[in-house]
Length: 503
Image (cartoon, rainbow, N blue to C red; front, side, top):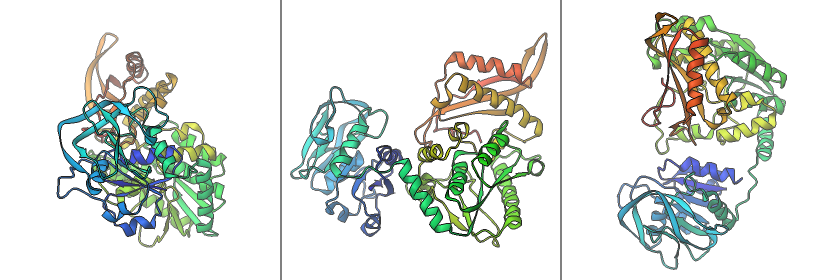
């Protein structure tokens, strides 16, 4: 297992994901985690992440100095390289010129770069630089701006790089990470088949003859969890609450898929209840809280009617666990929508089989479990549903308009082969009405905003560069099929400064 020590880099999760893509199990801990806590995880290698701090800052995060004396194979990245160099007797200084963005290695050699040939582009982001190596270390790579772009220790298992091998802007970075894993002697057995086998065993042993309750939203996480419980053969009930805020045909699609695969499913029709509670409410956070409260009440009622249950299963993922632990940069932007706030009399034990998995790993499990692609590959969808994609008050009329428009947008993305190229796509119904022309008459119609983004981890995102011909077809088809909409706009805002959802 490779332990990634997080010193605040925006790419830390990406490092862990890249290692898992190379079939090596990895975990993330805060960079200043004490040695005793680190040893509980029995790491076979360490990676020190980058970070925004400077080693000259007295408050900068630092690893437990005892860690570096364990003799574990170690890779320092960016800030992690500077930490290693400084802690082991080298020297770090303010660089004469900061180095940001793409750079080319003008020279590279040694086992970390084994198998690389020709031009090697890397991604730099640093102001400090290593100017004197620790005793016995040697330079393994350099750029035009930086004569110490990578270094290696005499043990042949400890390395440091000033660039980020984990990002897409370092095209040969995966080969560098793979070389490190081989040099460190890390087992590469983190496969979907192996993970599924372990999860089935874990669920069977923990649940035994007891009963499990879970909420199904229609997304890939909860749907895959329901299939896992069914495959494990444990006594379970999956509850799908139709709050009337779903996309076109979503309830029927999810219900049909899960029942066919052996999930014990109960669907609760609560449309009228939710719409009544949302009447007159315009504030987005108020809408989220109302939907969360109503969901808990409906779910609790089902739990009492169908109970008792010992376990409550949730599709909590590893990024959620990292955020909950505090970590670096774990500020909450919006109210969380996992099942929370259940009444005191419903004393469940939590069952979270996916707590160490990333989203793409859950999708791999879903494939093995037979979840149909339309659900398995579905873009993320907020727990409050279309309520937070309708700006202002939610009404039945607005829901109908947005459902139709959203369906046209998503269907065309699939027809053009673009759906899988974007990480998330959505339509937002704004409260703005714009003047337009229908035949010989002027009319006022809703302004609909379309949004599509690309991202590696959803922490940051860029707007998707969809073809103009595609956007033209969408903008013509939506007002033609949905006459209540008079104007279509496309959102060009990245995250940050904006969030992916509008509310």
